[in-house]
Image (cartoon, rainbow, N blue to C red; front, side):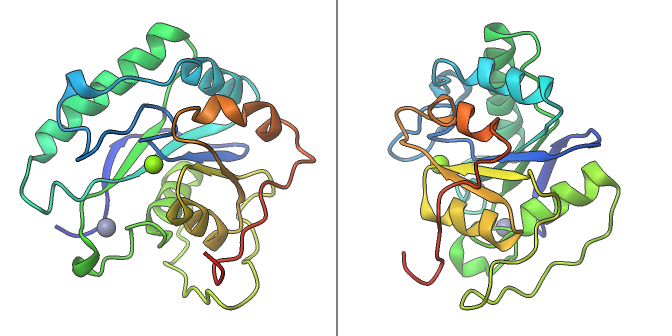
Length: 204
Ligand SMILES: [Mg+2]
Ligand SMILES: [Zn+2]
C-alpha cells in the first residue's frame, strides 16, 4: 500500500490546520483505537474545530495508524472509526467539519514518506486543498526550518513526531497534553502573532 489513505476533500483559501488525531481530537488508548466505539472525543474539540473554520482555516487531520499494515484491521474499519470521529465532533458543534482525514497505514520498516515525522501527509493535504503540486521535499533535519506554505499554517500534536512533521513544512507547531488536546491551545492558535512552540528536530 503506497502513500497515505485520503478520506474527504475540500479547498483552502486561507491557512490549513494540520491536526493529529489520537491525544488531540480524541483520547488515545493503549494499543490503538481499534473500533468505532473506542473513539471518544476530548471535550471541547468540536468547538475548537468550529472556531478554526470560522476563522478561515481548512482542517486536515493527519494520523499514523500502523495497525493497518500490521494486519490488525482493515481500511474499511478505519473509515468506520473516522465516521465516529466526524459524528462526535459535529454533535458538539455543527460547524466542526473536517475537510480531509489523512492516514499513514505504514510501519517504520515500510520506509514510507508519510509516517510522521515525515511530512508526506501534510504535503499531500496541502496539494489537495490548495490544488498545488508540491513535491515531497528533501528534509534536512539539521538545517533551518523550511519556509512555510502559508504563514498561519499550524500543526497540532501530542508527540515529537507531530512537531517534526509540522516543522518540516514550516508550520507553526503546538504541542498539547494527550488529556487536554486541541482545546488546550486553541486560543494561542487563533492569535496570529503566536509563532507556536519552539521545536528543534535535532534535540528531541
Ligand atoms: Mg497523537
Ligand atoms: Zn506512510
